[in-house]
Length: 175
Image (cartoon, rainbow, N blue to C red; front, side, top):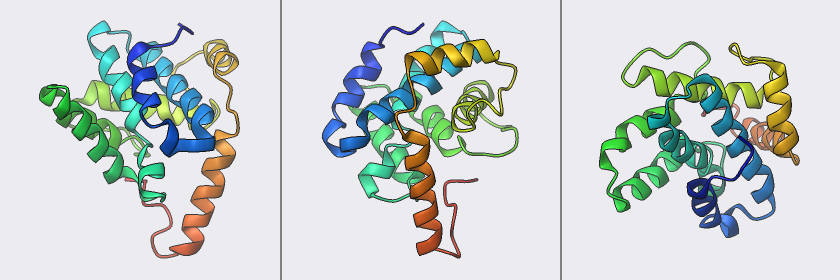
């Protein structure tokens, strides 16, 4: 499961300049989330959706230079999917991105993929504190293959800075 995914690689490369010095850190986060998705839901038909959602779910941080990034992330995903003629995925992937920081179980359209993606991201961001049934050995293997490279520290600094600058809207990414 540690081999590169062509779709993820090509999409990420198109954002390499925008992401800049955080590219490898974000790339590894994208892969850990993607691989967590495949562990939670191994349905082959959903793998491409998880790859697209993983690449775009936080991309708005760099597009907008802000931690109020959910809508810009969705916009980038929608643009890509429309250009690729995958309009039938737009609503589902938008929901995956929109709800990926939801603190409670998601219930709604596309429940399987949205909930899988939510769990996969929470598992990675929490360093496996929230595992949703995933085995520590599996998470350790993903982290060994795709180490953090400072991504969690980057998030902590970014969220702290946003909260300081916007005390009445400190965590806009949480739904």
